[in-house]
Length: 116
Length: 115
Image (cartoon, rainbow over the protein chains, first blue to last red):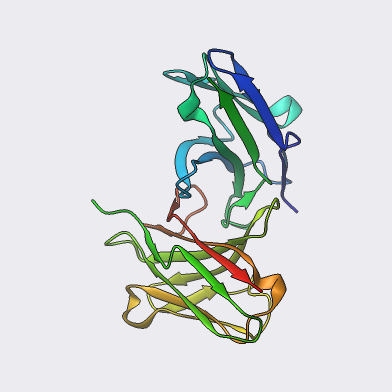
């Protein structure tokens, strides 16, 4: 069965600090997709990134970067020079190839608080 | 293009009452999903519609929950009668296709509190 673990319940940082949100997953499939979503105080889940299991290249988008390591089954998310607007709950999710479940499994979320 | 919308944003009801949540997916998205997050826990799948048909309702907790999607457009999720453990945030999501790599786009959620 698939499982996503976000061990950090809450992280508190001061603006301009770098912060990494951890995501560890379990799956028996060799083909799967990983996602990160952001839930700001307004409530909606905002899609951030999708990564397939065959692409281990790290991705950078502005201040956001993602480190995918199959060897450790991790898909960590780093925010560089954090800002107050980054304060949100961040969810990691996994969906498996046909034969597995295409419905994503979510972690419990990590609440990030960025103080001015 | 409008995103997924949900109504109401909040609902506070007493145990035993009925509540109906509504979701309007992104226009053109045949796939509509309902999820629930109980405070501090994972977002859990409830069910999936493809157009007006229920593709997968394995996550529905019990027969107090009834979901419909008449005409394949918006969907409603009714809880009757509501119990205390039904409290949580109910999310709706939609996607163009139902493949595992497909990104689901979520609405803002409905916060339900059962007293």
